[in-house]
Length: 325
Image 1 (cartoon, rainbow, N blue to C red):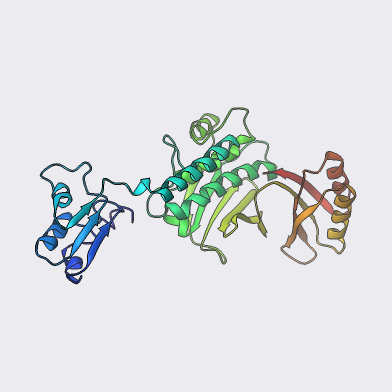
Image 2: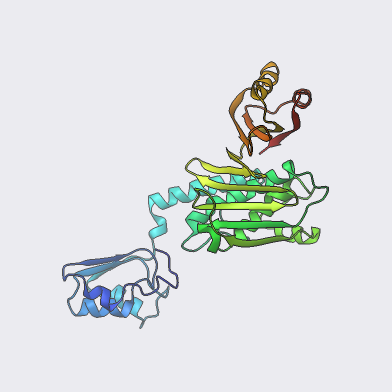
């Protein structure tokens, strides 16, 4: 239970009065969630059997404050805010720290940094995976776009993301975008300042959800647009330039634009097979039958330049892009 404007004092005298006299109150979340003066009154009146508290509203509590009086109360078991020191909490902290170190060394965002915007508040757990998605969309954009220079961007938080604080998402997107568009070392700490120096503008706003996804993140810049969401298996790209897809933004990808005609999938597969490039996943998306189509393939290793040239020589293929994510 986080302490927010909505949860502060949410358990007060009327709620405590609904409990039976043998009830026990346990608070190891945040001080201030329970109204301390109401809890003291209920304990003194015998309306509750007892309480166990790990947190108080003011830490350390003033000697004459309600927090200190609760800690000294004969019906209270008090511990000094040890919730983060359990074996389970320490293991989780170590695991998250290891993931953060690995992510930063690979140029990605950390889930938490002292001097960078991070997802906080009651929606933090929901937002954090989208921070990683924003970073990956930033890395994906320059590998797909044809613009001679970086355009003005729009980052749209759709569905349940519409009302969340956007700073962490914008910073993660810029961190990914600038990895391949500048020779400077970019991190989530300096991404904003570098973007400002380069004159990059990212407009952000919320919007309604689209399709079947409760939350999604959409980026547009110039003639290129991308959208993604979070699935049980991690981040997914769900749209590229209006083509509906379902792809994991990881590893080596190949994307082709081609005519929607019979035999195209077989021709691409033959070229890659002869080059000993194994396809792990493949999908094709089209807007209209017989019109333009987009094929996205995840491959086990990057295709060599000669293989890409062979794909571009296939009749009906207009563009071939090799992506490194």
